[in-house]
Image 1 (cartoon, rainbow, N blue to C red):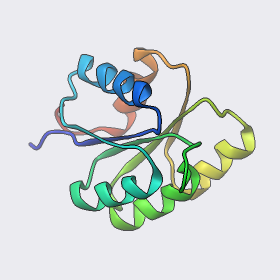
Image 2 (tube, rainbow, N blue to C red):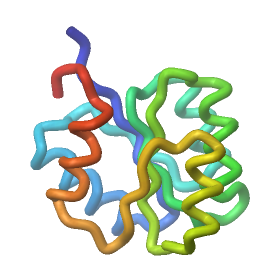
Image 3 (cartoon, rainbow, N blue to C red):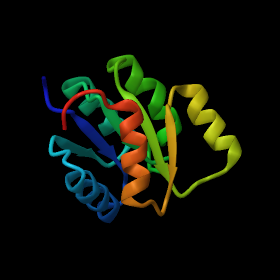
Image 4 (tube, rainbow, N blue to C red):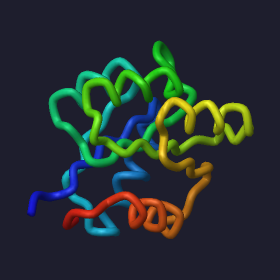
Length: 124
């Protein structure tokens, strides 16, 4: 069985590292990064990740717009929003665009683990 591929998308370097450390602590080692929506679409096209964690607020293309574009190039990806923006309107729009879950920042390791268990069916 192939390793779970995860794409972490956030414009803040510290948040990418923090999420990567959380994923590594959970046993997920096949993690790549993007810092905005445009880069996320390109990386998703190449790597076909099982999971994409996606921030909402990023320069250029935000996470809400990126959801649909990522799913066009990597239809099997499960997109989990990880954002400090917790507006009900934004969450509904993310789900409508194709996100499967929404983890508010700040998050705990348990929050990430719980979400991944719902959507990852391959080995870590």
